[in-house]
Image (cartoon, rainbow, N blue to C red; front, side, top):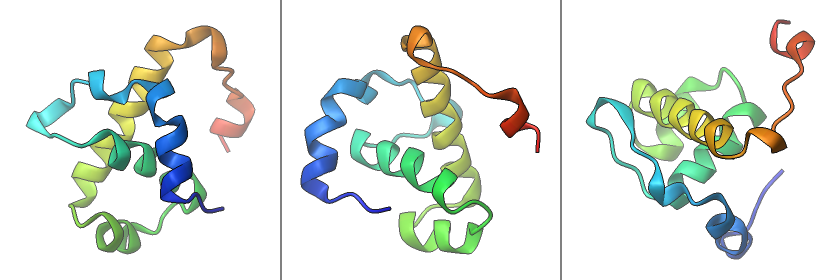
Amino acid sequence: FRFKLSEIQLFLPYFQLSHIQFCNGYSCCPETALCILLYRPAVPNWLKEDIKIFQHSQSWISSIFNDVVEYLVEQYPKHMEWDPSRLTR
């Protein structure tokens, strides 16, 4: 799947990602954080591609992804539904 920049900018404000406090002293603009959130599950295990696309280390990308997921779970718990059977495969 692909999103156009205009589409990302359209729904970005609803996530309020500018409020995230990133771990490890990392910083990331909300647009990039959302792109990482959308990209990582779509193409798992393509670490070299992750690094090429986002031009940051694997640890930075993983940390940003984890921080965004944790933030969204904390902010919108009623809207999150985890499927343990899919997560443990």
